Image (cartoon, rainbow, N blue to C red; front, side):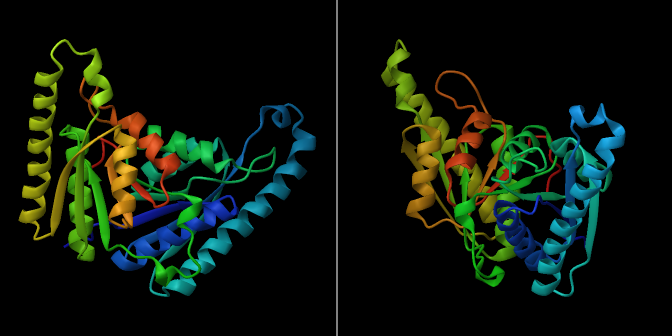
Length: 300
């Protein structure tokens, strides 16, 4: 029987934000027995390409820094779990494209990365890179905010999961991943559906629309409950009023959530929410990691 996650890619630029992402990626790999790939990308710059002779010494220095960043993460992984298989790679190119292409070519199951990194000519800005990876990757991305930093990898918990849902295909795929992970870790799952009342004022029949939204929410939560029950995972569910991102962040705080699992694309239209923009807002504001699942992801 294959593992739930066979391989995890950890991009790094050597920043504190990247190391925070690496800690969570390492903890996930250790708990699930996945191989670890560490990738450091030296960003190619068009102005340097125009002066090739002068550029090479600069790139050589940047590649040395990239190698040190990758080895720092690799050493951290080996120290945390000597049984994990670790591969390090240095590439030159556009960071998010290099990350995406590496993940595709190596058939990576999950990308784990921090949401904040370094800036400047000689550094990868991991924040913008993370957003681009989230928008384009075909595999789940574990996006880790700076506030999720821990002193010890062993302190990282996977006990309480939050699975937001809007009943869409994207949310369903994310729920499948969340439930599969929760089953692996014996975690508790909380699911929440947002009824955004700000949209009701623009409707001709607000009472009827509210009733329809609540009914849709009950159906969506019941779907998650049924899937969790089939996997013998404990689950609680709630319909909440407010903007989706606020509802999710409030639920995460209330239940002391360790990991939010959500799709990167959901529904649009009046009374429904676009999980893409919601996911970006949650990733930017959350104090805990967000496991982002694209609708194109393979089922767990």
